[in-house]
Amino acid sequence: MQRCLELARLGAGNVAPNPLVGSVIVYNNLIIGEGWHQKVGYAHAEVNAIASVSEANQPHLKLATLYVNLEPCAHFGKTPPCADLIIASGIPKVVIGMLDPNPLVAGKGIEKLRNAGIEVITDVLKDECLLLNKRFIKGITQKKPYVILKWAQTANGFLSPDASKISKEEFEQQRHITGKWVQKLVHKWRTQEDAIMVGTNTALTDNPALNNRAWEGRSPARVVLDKSLRLPSNLKIFDGSQRTFVLNASVEKEAGNNSYINLNFEEDWFSEALEKLYSQGVSSLVVEGGAQLLNHIILTSLWDEAIVFYSKSHLAEGVKAPNIGGKLLFQEDLGQVALFQYLNQ
Image 1 (cartoon, helix red, strand yellow):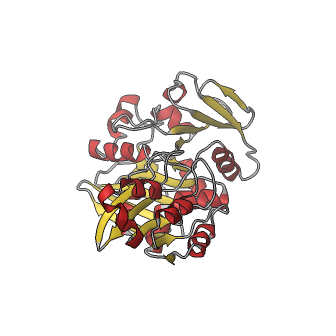
Image 2 (cartoon, rainbow, N blue to C red; image 1 turned 120 degrees about the vertical axis):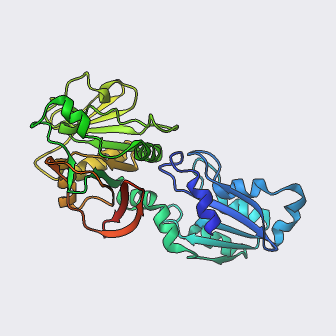
Image 3 (tube, rainbow, N blue to C red; image 1 turned 90 degrees about the vertical axis):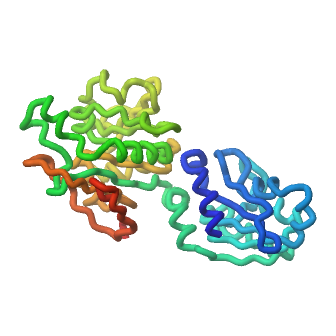
C-alpha cells in the first residue's frame, strides 16, 4: 500500500478534480504490475497496473493480489468501471486503502467485487490514504476547494517591510526574506495546485506574476481580490497568460482569459468565492497574501492547511505575520529557513 501511495503522488497536478490513485499487483511476494492515474480523463490506476503485467505473468493474475489506495470505481464515467476489469482479469484478492466518498462509488465497487467472489480487505494505511486525497475528499463532500494558506515570515514576526514607510528601492531590497531554493520549492508546489490567490494590496505592491517560472509544469489559475475594481490593467496578473479570476463586488463577466466573479461582500464572501471557484473547476486554492486577506480567512476558519516558512532574517519593522493555530503536521529545517505545516483541526 505504501508503494501505491508513492505511485499515486506521481499524478499530482495532472488529475484534479479526480483523486490521486496508485495500484500494485503482487504474486508470490513479487510485484508483477503497477500503475497510477496519470491524467484526468485517462485510464485509472488499476487499468494501468493490469496492463503493465507481462505476458509471462498473465497466468499468475488468477493467484495475485491487487492493492489500490482508493476503492475501485463501479460506474461508467470518462472510463469504464475498474471493478469490472478486476473481475474479468481473474484477480482473487483486492486490498483497498480507503472507501471512495464519491456517491457514485461509495461502497459499490467493494460490493461488486465481493459479489463476484473476490476477497476484499479495506482500510489499510487508511489515515495516509485520507491525507493524500484531502483535496478530492473536500471537493466531493463540500463542493469547495481545499484551501492552503502560505507565507514566509522573519524571525521577529514580519511578513514584509511596510511599503508605505520606505522607498520603492528599499522595499524591493528587503521584501524577499527567503532564498532561491525556497522559491523553486514553492513553484514546484504551484504546478500541483489549481489556483493561487492574493489580495488587492499584494497585487498592487508586489505586482506578482503568480506563475511557476522556477519549475517546469503547468501554472495555476490566478485569483485576485479586487472588490472595487481598482487594480490597473497593466499588472502582470492581467497579462492573459493564465486564467485569472477577479473577485469583485459589481461585475460578473468573461473578458478573454479573465473571469470576473461577483460576490456579496456584506455576507460571508470567502465562502461564496470558494463555491464559485469550485464550480469553475478549482479543487485546490493556495492563498499567498497579504496579511489582511490571510487574517480574514484565519478568523473565519475557512482554511484547511497552512504552510509557513520561518526565516532567520530580521526586519526593523514591517507588516506583522498572522498567528496560526491548528495541528502541527510536519516541520523541517531547511538551513536559513524552517518549514512548518499545519492542519486546521
